[in-house]
Amino acid sequence: MKIDNNIEGYDPLGEDHVGTSSNTPLRLDAFKLSNEEKIDIIKDDVRHIMETLGLDLTDDSLNGTPNRVAKMFVKEIFGGLDPNKKPSASTFDNKYKYGEMLVEKNITLYSTCEHHLLPIVGKAHIAYISNGTVVGLSKMNRIVDYFAKRPQVQERLTIQIVKELQEVLNTQDVACVIDAKHLCVNSRGIRDIESSTVTSEFGGKFKDKAVRREFLDYIKLETKF
Image 1 (spheres, rainbow, N blue to C red):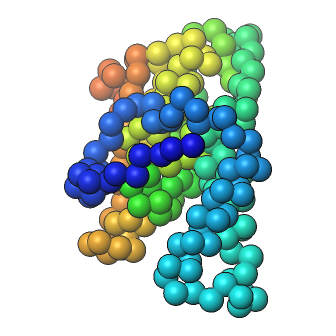
Image 2 (spheres, rainbow, N blue to C red; image 1 turned 180 degrees about the vertical axis):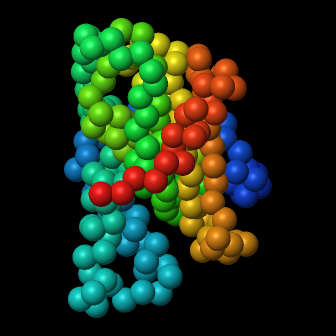
């Protein structure tokens, strides 16, 4: 399989944190290989990187690293690229006629910056207003986790979460706010450990300032047990 490795011109795009699409950019043959085949290829590539850096892979501590990294890439941190892992979000009739917004806040988010393959760690806050159907609370967390587990840009991630819930719930009245730290900023480059990035996407009724303010006020509430 031939892959275009010409990266001329891509560094400025990465540094400027520019996203190119609201869909994750995938090749048409993205799922031609099985997971095990992908792991075998990535394992060799990781080994080559480590050897190029001068590391001694005969050392007991490093010997298994290429395989561990390859499995982590395919089955864990980039598992959200696999459409078979997309959570099935069953909906139910809103029989209790709850007509106000439902907010799921402080959803722990782990993702990976697609420009430097470094971690993004933060919290996602989601809300929707039912138009007759509701979705299980844990499914909202699973949707966040699914789209986070891929090389990401935070802006795209925010949009993807909202679009998926809009489709699942058959309503435009969905909102999402993400507050996250990017280790590509915190641990390299400018190395600003205090900064975080906030993104938002508001659909339907959430475009109204009063509804949006209500949502933002809810996510400020402190929850204690």
